[in-house]
Image (cartoon, protein in one colour):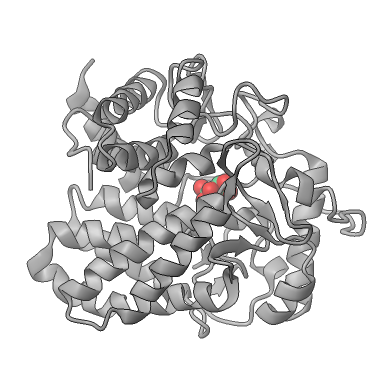
Length: 418
Ligand code: GLC
């Protein structure tokens, strides 16, 4: 295998998807700036151009709302053929944005860029720091329930049609959304995308929040879906730790962030589903566990949380699939190796899980996962996601975060850590 060539190809993908000061996830399917995609891109771009990496994150924060929220999409310029576009979200600000958020990994990725660029990067980090704090504050103010992070729309989780939301989605009425034309299925095989009944419900949730003027208090009370997302809680806990590290580095006060970390640790305990023996999401409308062992649960190590039962599940699942952590348990009835977050393997999630495993001293497991992801990408390409059994590429091609993950972690030339 010619790894130099693959390194070059990964850089080329990021350059081709570069729109000047931000990077699109892939051409066509996702023509705007996505929140956590951009954070991954910054991490990847920093391997060859640290200044451009700073620009990536700074451009994302041009979309930050006055209340601190950083939206899941920033619509810097009109792109034909994306649905739901800025006209549907109808957020009265410039640049136009969506009205929901996404996994807050920006603090973590900004820290990694900063670690590589301490001297010149200090001014970037100083400017970004306050913005990161205000985003985290927004989460704490509007989205923490008993220390767990709540989502109001599955798209916020970054794991759009994961099985975690099945129970709660069944209670969302999608029958009144009218006619619309999806664009995603024009780019990708519909079998690899969410179904129409899911899409109807996604729109119903979007319309609810839009029609109440994105009022977080009203959304908390009455939105059709509110879930404590185990993946979000782990990623936010991790990000708060990284923010704390940055606060110390930059001589900022740390009590507030330390308080968040303590609260989130309590939330982690509440996510434990004792009956099923794993971390789990919770439907906050009904108080019931989702009873889903999805890839979100395995982000525990990345948050600095270990548990022997999670390791046992991990070993069982990794004994079933050669290419890394599937987005759903292969033993579950809902498992589908093709359909997006209901089975396929995602290289970015593999990276976060493996980095967590390594930090928690499960070095062999971490290295095995890295090697599996390395051969997955080397043999099957820089796709959005993959069949966990046979590695068949799925979703969009020339995918930015897959390229970023290659450069930072999966390539034999990568540092393989933060
Ligand atoms: C899909 C993914 C989400 C990602 C976006 C852009 O919606 O589920 O995680 O951010 O595509 O790549």
